[in-house]
Image (tube, rainbow, N blue to C red):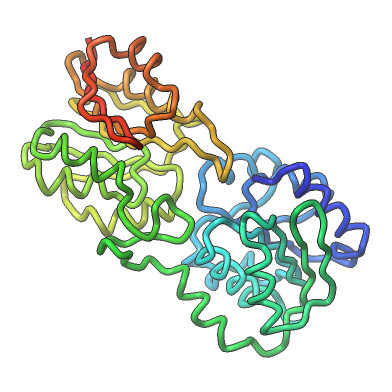
Length: 344
C-alpha cells in the first residue's frame, strides 16, 4: 500500500525536481493506490496494474488504464511515454519485470522513477538497477527510497531476462503462475489441506472464489468428475490468466471480478471452495474474508456446501456461525482450520 510515509517521499521528490518538465504521458507501474498520483497533481497518467480494484479506482480518478501487459508494445497509447514511475512490490520477480517494461516503453533519454519502502525491497531493486545505470538522484526518506534515472539510448542486456520474469512460468509445484500473485512459487499448505477434504466430493455447479492461479480448481476438476460447471473468480487478471492454463477444461469459465465492489449475479450453486485472502499488500484486512463468506451464503442453493480453509488466528468463526449455523470443523492444525458448512 502507499502509506503516508510513501506519500511524503513522493512530495519530497517533487520538491527536488523529479517530476519537473514533464509534458507527455506518464506511465505508472505497480502503484497499489492511484490516489497518490492525485497528490502529485500529475496530468495525462496511464495506470497499469493487474488488480481490478486498482484499475477501478484509477478510472474513478479519470486516469487512463491498461491491464494486459502482453500487448504493451502494440498499444499506440504507449508510444509517447516520456516518464515512467515504478512502484516496488513485495514480489522481486514482479518488480524487475516492471522495471524492464519501464525501460522498454519509455522514450530514449526519458525519465524513470523508482520508489518503494525498505520492507518491500526497494534497496534490492535500487542496487540491481544502479549496477546497470547510474541514478541521476536518490532520496532516502520515510523508511524507503526514491530514485530518478535517465533512460539510456541503448538498453542494458540484463533487461531481457528481467522482462521474461513477467511471463507465465511453471512454479516449483508444476503450475503456471504470474509474478506478484498469491503463493506464486508453490502450492500453499492451506490450499493443499483443503483439497484433501473435498477431493472427490464435489458435483454440479461449483465456484472457486479467489481462485488465484487455480490450484483448488485444478484438483477439483481432476478428482470430482461429477462437476458439471466450474467457475473461477479472481481480482488479479494475471492470476486468472495463469489459471486458464492450469485448469484447461471445457467445464470451466473465468471472471475477473473484485468481490468487494463488483456484483456477482450467480446463484443456486452446489459448492463453493475458497481460501480467501486476508491481506491487501502487506496490510491485514479481515473484511476480505468476511466479504467472501457473505458472497458464499448468497450464491449457494439451499443445501449447498461451502468448503473453506483459513489461518486459525483469523476471527472468522463467529461470522461462520451466524451465516452457516450448520457447519463442521473438519480439521485444525497449528496454522489452519478447515470447515464445511451447509446453507440451510
